[in-house]
Length: 374
Picture 1: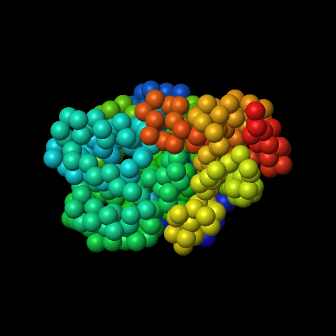
Picture 2: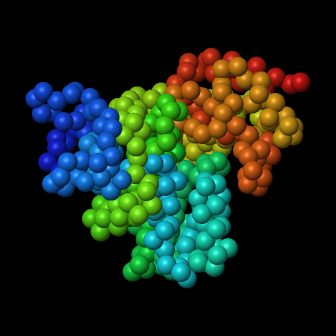
């Protein structure tokens, strides 16, 4: 059941996704409409959409905040949401991040480090003792779990529940898991970030991000920083994110069922040398993930036989699976990550796969076609 602290019924998450964020005033639209306005008549609390959003933004934040029993702020992108957290760090701060975070976050971290603003600890996400040390000593502990693209799962219950420094902020990028598979705030995190571009929006047609916290002080601080940096989500993007979120439970249920089936089949394929999916017992952090995640998600990576060129050919040869970047849509996509500038440290034959909602046997037939020896 979805716990409620706001007087709303104790609906399940599946029901909340469909029913939350609606204005049930008689005569109002059933679906939240996009409100295309930058300013509003005075006097009123809502002055200007950059600072106060629109009624569409309000509905989106109510919907997404309710997913994790917190208060949400919507942003123009996931990167805009992440940047707001890093912007609060003072000169001389110490931060802990995974060794291989999302490349946009890696860029923010590298820039601050190069400017002499921060001291950075890059930690193996599976090295829980190292993260426990960071909890006591760092100003920001940034976890991304499951991690992109190696799918390492951090031991969130142990790390987020550990003793921490008085000023330590714990932030979790939970994009791959979605709010359906893990709730970091319940485990002790201060703020959770989602790139709503991905599974929440779900249709590869928008950019959006969200921060969710249970701290009124953090919410107000992030709201102020969103205003200062002009990172407010647009009305159409907010509308599309709401529309996509309504079906997220159904999409994720189908996609992660497909992902488990494909992971098991790929692990037996003669043209595949390694499959990285937290749902497989062979994954190094499967046991940890199984202790607290409700599902293992729809993201995985695998390595092909041969060279990087061979992996590129596999991506290009697919006819149903889309050779495209990003993830979390209804359609299955894959890409060779080492081909992306700045990702050269990734194994050259590693392909990241975002599993969609197609028929799993159709996807498997396409894999067999794409993976056939040349």
